[in-house]
Image 1 (tube, rainbow, N blue to C red):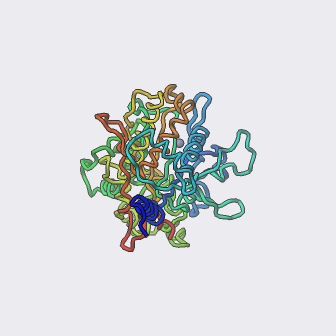
Image 2 (cartoon, rainbow, N blue to C red):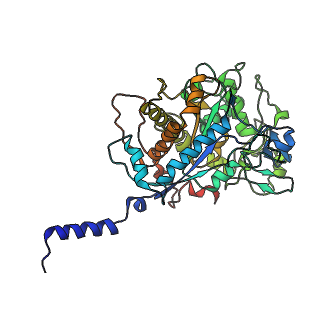
Image 3 (spheres, protein in one colour):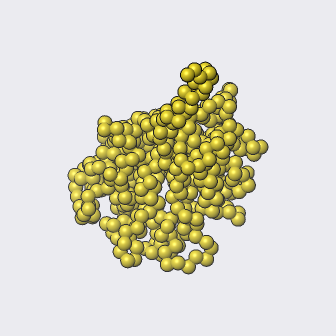
Length: 448
Ligand SMILES: [Zn+2]
Protein backbone atom coordinates (compact mmCIF):
# COMPACT_ATOMS: atom_id res chain seq x y z
CA UNK A 1 0.00 0.00 0.00
CA UNK A 2 1.30 3.39 -0.94
CA UNK A 3 0.73 6.32 1.31
CA UNK A 4 1.03 9.83 0.07
CA UNK A 5 4.42 11.23 0.98
CA UNK A 6 3.02 13.91 3.28
CA UNK A 7 1.31 11.30 5.45
CA UNK A 8 4.63 9.49 5.96
CA UNK A 9 6.30 12.74 6.92
CA UNK A 10 3.47 13.61 9.26
CA UNK A 11 3.46 10.23 11.00
CA UNK A 12 7.23 10.24 11.26
CA UNK A 13 7.21 13.66 12.90
CA UNK A 14 4.37 12.65 15.19
CA UNK A 15 6.38 9.61 16.22
CA UNK A 16 9.36 11.85 16.90
CA UNK A 17 7.17 14.28 18.78
CA UNK A 18 5.77 11.58 21.03
CA UNK A 19 8.74 9.30 21.48
CA UNK A 20 11.74 11.55 21.37
CA UNK A 21 12.57 12.48 24.95
CA UNK A 22 11.59 16.07 25.57
CA UNK A 23 14.44 18.49 26.28
CA UNK A 24 13.22 18.65 29.87
CA UNK A 25 13.64 14.95 30.46
CA UNK A 26 16.77 14.82 28.36
CA UNK A 27 18.67 17.43 30.35
CA UNK A 28 21.21 16.63 32.98
CA UNK A 29 19.19 18.82 35.35
CA UNK A 30 15.71 18.08 34.04
CA UNK A 31 13.96 19.92 36.80
CA UNK A 32 15.28 22.75 38.90
CA UNK A 33 14.40 23.63 42.46
CA UNK A 34 14.34 27.27 43.46
CA UNK A 35 13.72 28.72 46.91
CA UNK A 36 12.38 32.26 47.19
CA UNK A 37 13.54 33.65 50.51
CA UNK A 38 11.80 36.87 51.56
CA UNK A 39 13.83 38.47 54.35
CA UNK A 40 12.75 38.48 58.02
CA UNK A 41 9.07 37.99 59.03
CA UNK A 42 9.17 37.89 62.83
CA UNK A 43 9.84 40.75 65.21
CA UNK A 44 12.65 42.13 67.30
CA UNK A 45 11.49 41.44 70.82
CA UNK A 46 13.17 41.36 74.20
CA UNK A 47 14.46 39.49 76.12
CA UNK A 48 17.01 37.98 73.76
CA UNK A 49 17.12 34.67 75.68
CA UNK A 50 13.47 34.09 74.67
CA UNK A 51 13.11 35.78 71.30
CA UNK A 52 16.56 36.01 69.72
CA UNK A 53 18.23 34.17 66.82
CA UNK A 54 21.56 32.36 66.38
CA UNK A 55 20.85 29.69 68.98
CA UNK A 56 24.09 28.27 70.31
CA UNK A 57 24.05 24.76 71.77
CA UNK A 58 27.40 25.34 73.51
CA UNK A 59 26.01 28.04 75.78
CA UNK A 60 22.37 26.97 75.41
CA UNK A 61 21.04 30.37 74.40
CA UNK A 62 20.52 32.91 71.66
CA UNK A 63 23.55 34.97 70.73
CA UNK A 64 21.70 37.75 68.89
CA UNK A 65 18.51 39.77 68.85
CA UNK A 66 16.05 38.66 66.18
CA UNK A 67 16.41 41.05 63.23
CA UNK A 68 13.00 42.13 62.03
CA UNK A 69 14.44 44.05 59.08
CA UNK A 70 14.24 47.57 57.75
CA UNK A 71 11.41 50.07 57.86
CA UNK A 72 10.62 53.44 56.33
CA UNK A 73 7.66 55.82 56.29
CA UNK A 74 4.61 53.53 56.45
CA UNK A 75 6.45 50.50 55.09
CA UNK A 76 8.22 47.42 56.39
CA UNK A 77 10.80 45.33 54.62
CA UNK A 78 9.39 41.95 55.70
CA UNK A 79 5.91 42.76 54.33
CA UNK A 80 7.12 44.22 51.04
CA UNK A 81 9.52 41.36 50.39
CA UNK A 82 6.86 38.77 51.14
CA UNK A 83 4.37 40.47 48.81
CA UNK A 84 6.92 40.57 45.96
CA UNK A 85 7.97 36.95 46.64
CA UNK A 86 4.38 35.73 46.44
CA UNK A 87 4.08 37.31 43.00
CA UNK A 88 7.33 35.66 41.88
CA UNK A 89 6.07 32.26 43.04
CA UNK A 90 2.78 32.78 41.25
CA UNK A 91 4.52 33.64 37.96
CA UNK A 92 6.88 30.67 38.24
CA UNK A 93 3.96 28.31 38.83
CA UNK A 94 3.49 28.36 35.05
CA UNK A 95 7.06 27.10 34.61
CA UNK A 96 6.55 24.24 37.08
CA UNK A 97 6.36 20.64 35.78
CA UNK A 98 2.56 20.77 36.13
CA UNK A 99 2.25 24.40 34.99
CA UNK A 100 0.89 26.05 31.88
CA UNK A 101 4.22 26.49 30.15
CA UNK A 102 2.60 28.35 27.24
CA UNK A 103 1.69 31.16 29.63
CA UNK A 104 5.23 31.40 30.92
CA UNK A 105 6.53 31.29 27.37
CA UNK A 106 4.37 34.34 26.59
CA UNK A 107 6.06 36.17 29.44
CA UNK A 108 9.52 35.33 28.04
CA UNK A 109 8.35 36.40 24.58
CA UNK A 110 8.12 39.94 25.99
CA UNK A 111 11.91 39.80 26.45
CA UNK A 112 13.14 38.00 23.36
CA UNK A 113 11.94 36.74 20.01
CA UNK A 114 14.65 34.09 19.98
CA UNK A 115 13.85 30.56 21.12
CA UNK A 116 14.76 29.60 24.70
CA UNK A 117 15.29 26.09 25.95
CA UNK A 118 12.58 24.72 28.12
CA UNK A 119 13.18 23.81 31.72
CA UNK A 120 10.82 23.00 34.57
CA UNK A 121 11.13 24.90 37.84
CA UNK A 122 9.76 23.95 41.24
CA UNK A 123 9.50 26.98 43.48
CA UNK A 124 9.30 26.93 47.26
CA UNK A 125 9.06 29.77 49.80
CA UNK A 126 11.44 29.74 52.74
CA UNK A 127 8.90 31.10 55.20
CA UNK A 128 5.19 31.74 55.76
CA UNK A 129 3.60 35.21 55.66
CA UNK A 130 4.85 37.59 58.32
CA UNK A 131 3.23 37.68 61.77
CA UNK A 132 0.42 40.15 62.07
CA UNK A 133 0.60 43.28 64.21
CA UNK A 134 -0.19 42.67 67.85
CA UNK A 135 0.85 39.01 67.69
CA UNK A 136 0.75 37.62 71.22
CA UNK A 137 2.13 34.14 70.71
CA UNK A 138 4.78 32.98 73.14
CA UNK A 139 7.44 32.61 70.44
CA UNK A 140 6.50 34.86 67.49
CA UNK A 141 9.83 34.21 65.75
CA UNK A 142 9.59 30.42 65.64
CA UNK A 143 8.84 30.30 61.88
CA UNK A 144 11.29 33.00 60.82
CA UNK A 145 14.64 32.42 62.50
CA UNK A 146 17.62 31.93 60.23
CA UNK A 147 19.23 29.33 62.47
CA UNK A 148 17.98 26.19 64.21
CA UNK A 149 16.94 26.57 67.82
CA UNK A 150 15.80 24.51 70.79
CA UNK A 151 12.30 25.44 71.89
CA UNK A 152 11.09 25.52 75.48
CA UNK A 153 10.14 21.84 75.32
CA UNK A 154 13.70 20.96 74.39
CA UNK A 155 12.79 20.15 70.77
CA UNK A 156 15.23 21.19 68.06
CA UNK A 157 13.40 23.30 65.46
CA UNK A 158 14.62 24.13 61.99
CA UNK A 159 15.51 27.66 61.03
CA UNK A 160 15.11 29.09 57.53
CA UNK A 161 18.57 28.01 56.38
CA UNK A 162 17.89 24.38 57.32
CA UNK A 163 14.52 24.59 55.56
CA UNK A 164 16.27 25.90 52.46
CA UNK A 165 18.83 23.06 52.62
CA UNK A 166 16.06 20.50 53.09
CA UNK A 167 14.73 21.41 49.64
CA UNK A 168 18.17 20.88 48.04
CA UNK A 169 17.67 23.89 45.76
CA UNK A 170 19.80 24.76 42.76
CA UNK A 171 19.11 28.45 43.34
CA UNK A 172 18.05 30.53 46.35
CA UNK A 173 16.80 34.06 45.75
CA UNK A 174 16.84 36.13 48.93
CA UNK A 175 15.00 39.46 48.71
CA UNK A 176 15.80 42.31 51.07
CA UNK A 177 15.85 46.08 51.25
CA UNK A 178 17.55 48.50 53.64
CA UNK A 179 16.31 51.58 55.50
CA UNK A 180 19.07 53.84 54.31
CA UNK A 181 22.52 53.28 52.91
CA UNK A 182 25.85 54.96 52.33
CA UNK A 183 25.77 57.73 49.70
CA UNK A 184 27.79 55.70 47.22
CA UNK A 185 25.27 52.86 47.26
CA UNK A 186 22.65 53.52 44.61
CA UNK A 187 19.99 51.28 43.20
CA UNK A 188 19.92 47.52 43.67
CA UNK A 189 22.90 45.59 44.96
CA UNK A 190 23.98 41.96 45.23
CA UNK A 191 25.00 40.66 48.66
CA UNK A 192 27.87 38.19 48.40
CA UNK A 193 30.40 36.24 50.44
CA UNK A 194 34.00 35.75 49.30
CA UNK A 195 35.71 32.40 49.09
CA UNK A 196 37.78 30.65 51.75
CA UNK A 197 41.09 31.76 50.22
CA UNK A 198 40.17 35.41 50.37
CA UNK A 199 39.27 35.15 54.06
CA UNK A 200 42.28 32.98 54.86
CA UNK A 201 44.53 35.88 53.85
CA UNK A 202 42.91 37.83 56.68
CA UNK A 203 43.75 35.08 59.17
CA UNK A 204 47.37 35.00 57.96
CA UNK A 205 47.57 38.78 58.29
CA UNK A 206 46.24 38.67 61.86
CA UNK A 207 48.82 35.98 62.65
CA UNK A 208 51.57 38.26 61.38
CA UNK A 209 52.31 35.80 58.57
CA UNK A 210 51.41 38.39 55.96
CA UNK A 211 52.83 41.78 56.66
CA UNK A 212 51.29 43.82 53.91
CA UNK A 213 47.67 44.30 53.09
CA UNK A 214 48.48 44.36 49.37
CA UNK A 215 46.50 41.13 48.88
CA UNK A 216 43.42 43.14 49.78
CA UNK A 217 42.43 44.68 46.49
CA UNK A 218 39.88 44.33 43.71
CA UNK A 219 36.07 44.49 43.74
CA UNK A 220 35.63 42.37 46.88
CA UNK A 221 38.03 44.53 48.89
CA UNK A 222 36.64 47.82 47.61
CA UNK A 223 33.11 46.79 48.48
CA UNK A 224 33.72 45.19 51.85
CA UNK A 225 30.76 45.84 54.10
CA UNK A 226 31.56 48.43 56.81
CA UNK A 227 29.38 48.12 59.89
CA UNK A 228 30.33 51.67 60.80
CA UNK A 229 32.40 54.47 59.32
CA UNK A 230 34.86 54.65 62.21
CA UNK A 231 36.85 51.70 60.89
CA UNK A 232 38.36 51.11 57.47
CA UNK A 233 36.97 48.43 55.20
CA UNK A 234 40.23 46.52 55.71
CA UNK A 235 39.64 46.57 59.47
CA UNK A 236 36.08 45.27 58.97
CA UNK A 237 37.44 42.58 56.66
CA UNK A 238 39.85 41.41 59.37
CA UNK A 239 36.97 41.41 61.85
CA UNK A 240 34.89 39.22 59.55
CA UNK A 241 37.83 36.95 58.88
CA UNK A 242 38.19 36.46 62.65
CA UNK A 243 34.45 35.79 62.98
CA UNK A 244 34.50 33.30 60.12
CA UNK A 245 37.41 31.25 61.50
CA UNK A 246 37.47 31.86 65.24
CA UNK A 247 33.83 32.78 66.05
CA UNK A 248 34.93 35.97 67.82
CA UNK A 249 35.14 39.53 66.49
CA UNK A 250 38.18 41.78 66.90
CA UNK A 251 38.26 45.46 67.82
CA UNK A 252 39.85 48.27 65.81
CA UNK A 253 43.25 47.46 67.34
CA UNK A 254 42.83 43.85 66.17
CA UNK A 255 42.42 42.60 69.72
CA UNK A 256 40.14 39.55 69.89
CA UNK A 257 36.93 40.14 71.83
CA UNK A 258 36.39 36.89 73.73
CA UNK A 259 33.44 38.47 75.50
CA UNK A 260 31.58 38.59 72.19
CA UNK A 261 31.42 34.94 71.15
CA UNK A 262 29.28 34.50 68.02
CA UNK A 263 28.98 30.73 67.78
CA UNK A 264 29.77 27.97 65.30
CA UNK A 265 27.40 28.82 62.47
CA UNK A 266 28.00 25.63 60.51
CA UNK A 267 26.59 23.73 63.49
CA UNK A 268 23.49 25.93 63.71
CA UNK A 269 21.97 24.47 60.53
CA UNK A 270 21.07 20.94 59.46
CA UNK A 271 23.28 19.74 56.65
CA UNK A 272 26.02 17.19 56.16
CA UNK A 273 28.86 19.57 57.00
CA UNK A 274 28.06 19.88 60.71
CA UNK A 275 30.39 18.45 63.34
CA UNK A 276 29.67 15.10 64.97
CA UNK A 277 27.22 14.87 67.88
CA UNK A 278 28.90 15.91 71.10
CA UNK A 279 31.00 18.59 69.40
CA UNK A 280 29.89 21.09 72.06
CA UNK A 281 32.31 19.62 74.58
CA UNK A 282 35.58 20.23 72.69
CA UNK A 283 34.11 23.49 71.37
CA UNK A 284 33.21 24.66 74.87
CA UNK A 285 36.82 24.11 75.90
CA UNK A 286 38.20 25.79 72.76
CA UNK A 287 40.53 22.79 72.40
CA UNK A 288 43.90 24.05 71.22
CA UNK A 289 45.20 23.06 67.80
CA UNK A 290 41.67 22.24 66.60
CA UNK A 291 38.97 24.06 64.67
CA UNK A 292 37.46 24.96 68.04
CA UNK A 293 40.46 26.99 69.10
CA UNK A 294 39.77 30.67 69.45
CA UNK A 295 43.47 31.55 69.35
CA UNK A 296 44.86 33.02 66.15
CA UNK A 297 48.08 31.06 66.39
CA UNK A 298 46.84 27.49 66.66
CA UNK A 299 43.41 27.45 65.02
CA UNK A 300 43.23 24.65 62.46
CA UNK A 301 40.50 24.71 59.80
CA UNK A 302 39.77 20.97 59.78
CA UNK A 303 36.60 18.93 59.57
CA UNK A 304 33.76 18.59 57.07
CA UNK A 305 32.78 22.27 56.99
CA UNK A 306 36.29 23.52 56.33
CA UNK A 307 36.84 20.88 53.67
CA UNK A 308 33.66 22.09 52.01
CA UNK A 309 34.84 25.68 52.20
CA UNK A 310 38.02 24.78 50.30
CA UNK A 311 36.20 22.69 47.66
CA UNK A 312 36.07 23.63 44.00
CA UNK A 313 32.29 23.94 44.21
CA UNK A 314 32.61 26.76 46.72
CA UNK A 315 35.14 28.44 44.42
CA UNK A 316 32.61 28.25 41.59
CA UNK A 317 29.96 29.75 43.83
CA UNK A 318 32.06 32.53 45.36
CA UNK A 319 35.17 33.19 43.26
CA UNK A 320 35.79 34.59 39.76
CA UNK A 321 32.94 33.81 37.38
CA UNK A 322 31.05 35.85 34.76
CA UNK A 323 31.23 39.13 36.74
CA UNK A 324 34.97 38.71 37.33
CA UNK A 325 34.42 38.45 41.10
CA UNK A 326 32.05 36.73 43.52
CA UNK A 327 31.56 33.59 41.36
CA UNK A 328 28.16 32.35 40.23
CA UNK A 329 26.54 33.95 43.28
CA UNK A 330 27.54 37.45 42.17
CA UNK A 331 26.46 36.71 38.61
CA UNK A 332 23.07 35.40 39.77
CA UNK A 333 22.44 38.44 41.97
CA UNK A 334 23.51 40.99 39.37
CA UNK A 335 21.73 39.20 36.55
CA UNK A 336 18.41 39.19 38.42
CA UNK A 337 18.95 42.90 39.15
CA UNK A 338 19.52 43.52 35.42
CA UNK A 339 16.30 41.65 34.66
CA UNK A 340 14.35 43.63 37.28
CA UNK A 341 15.66 46.90 35.86
CA UNK A 342 14.86 45.75 32.34
CA UNK A 343 11.35 44.76 33.39
CA UNK A 344 10.81 48.15 35.09
CA UNK A 345 12.09 50.07 32.06
CA UNK A 346 10.05 47.95 29.64
CA UNK A 347 6.92 48.64 31.65
CA UNK A 348 7.44 52.38 31.87
CA UNK A 349 8.79 52.41 35.43
CA UNK A 350 12.49 52.79 34.68
CA UNK A 351 14.67 54.50 37.26
CA UNK A 352 17.19 56.00 34.88
CA UNK A 353 19.90 54.17 36.81
CA UNK A 354 19.82 50.56 35.67
CA UNK A 355 23.38 49.69 36.57
CA UNK A 356 23.59 47.17 39.44
CA UNK A 357 24.83 48.96 42.56
CA UNK A 358 28.07 48.07 44.27
CA UNK A 359 27.90 44.66 45.96
CA UNK A 360 27.83 44.25 49.73
CA UNK A 361 30.65 41.86 50.61
CA UNK A 362 30.93 40.07 53.96
CA UNK A 363 30.55 36.60 55.52
CA UNK A 364 26.73 36.65 55.25
CA UNK A 365 24.88 33.59 56.52
CA UNK A 366 22.68 32.51 53.59
CA UNK A 367 25.33 32.89 50.86
CA UNK A 368 27.77 30.79 52.93
CA UNK A 369 25.50 28.16 54.51
CA UNK A 370 23.67 26.79 51.46
CA UNK A 371 25.07 24.70 48.59
CA UNK A 372 22.70 26.39 46.12
CA UNK A 373 23.64 29.34 43.95
CA UNK A 374 22.72 32.30 46.14
CA UNK A 375 21.22 35.38 44.50
CA UNK A 376 20.87 37.71 47.48
CA UNK A 377 19.54 41.12 46.56
CA UNK A 378 19.03 44.45 48.28
CA UNK A 379 16.24 46.03 46.24
CA UNK A 380 16.73 49.56 47.52
CA UNK A 381 16.42 51.94 50.47
CA UNK A 382 13.10 52.60 52.17
CA UNK A 383 14.02 56.11 53.26
CA UNK A 384 14.71 57.15 49.65
CA UNK A 385 11.41 58.11 48.12
CA UNK A 386 12.11 56.87 44.59
CA UNK A 387 13.24 53.45 45.81
CA UNK A 388 10.31 53.20 48.21
CA UNK A 389 7.78 54.08 45.50
CA UNK A 390 9.13 51.39 43.22
CA UNK A 391 9.04 48.72 45.93
CA UNK A 392 5.49 49.69 46.90
CA UNK A 393 3.92 50.52 43.54
CA UNK A 394 5.87 48.39 41.07
CA UNK A 395 5.82 44.98 42.70
CA UNK A 396 4.42 43.31 39.58
CA UNK A 397 7.27 44.60 37.45
CA UNK A 398 9.88 43.64 40.06
CA UNK A 399 8.38 40.15 40.40
CA UNK A 400 8.35 39.70 36.62
CA UNK A 401 12.03 40.66 36.44
CA UNK A 402 12.88 38.19 39.21
CA UNK A 403 10.86 35.35 37.64
CA UNK A 404 12.24 35.86 34.11
CA UNK A 405 15.72 36.35 35.58
CA UNK A 406 15.48 33.03 37.44
CA UNK A 407 14.38 31.29 34.27
CA UNK A 408 17.25 32.82 32.36
CA UNK A 409 19.81 31.75 34.98
CA UNK A 410 18.59 28.15 34.57
CA UNK A 411 17.76 27.99 30.86
CA UNK A 412 19.34 31.04 29.23
CA UNK A 413 17.26 33.71 27.49
CA UNK A 414 18.95 35.28 24.50
CA UNK A 415 18.15 38.98 24.50
CA UNK A 416 18.99 41.59 21.97
CA UNK A 417 21.96 43.17 23.69
CA UNK A 418 22.59 46.03 21.29
CA UNK A 419 25.24 48.29 22.80
CA UNK A 420 23.37 48.58 26.09
CA UNK A 421 25.78 47.52 28.89
CA UNK A 422 23.01 47.09 31.49
CA UNK A 423 20.93 44.61 29.52
CA UNK A 424 20.76 41.17 31.15
CA UNK A 425 23.44 38.89 29.73
CA UNK A 426 20.98 36.03 29.33
CA UNK A 427 23.54 33.29 29.96
CA UNK A 428 22.54 30.28 31.99
CA UNK A 429 24.72 29.26 34.91
CA UNK A 430 26.88 26.25 34.14
CA UNK A 431 25.33 23.94 36.72
CA UNK A 432 26.78 20.82 35.12
CA UNK A 433 30.18 21.54 36.62
CA UNK A 434 28.69 21.18 40.12
CA UNK A 435 29.07 17.41 40.01
CA UNK A 436 31.52 15.19 41.82
CA UNK A 437 33.38 12.20 40.40
CA UNK A 438 30.38 9.96 40.91
CA UNK A 439 28.20 12.44 38.97
CA UNK A 440 26.29 13.44 42.10
CA UNK A 441 25.29 17.07 42.08
CA UNK A 442 26.53 19.38 44.79
CA UNK A 443 22.99 20.69 45.25
CA UNK A 444 21.56 17.23 45.82
CA UNK A 445 24.23 16.30 48.31
CA UNK A 446 23.78 19.10 50.84
CA UNK A 447 22.14 16.75 53.35
CA UNK A 448 23.75 13.38 52.74
ZN1 LIG B 1 16.87 42.50 55.25
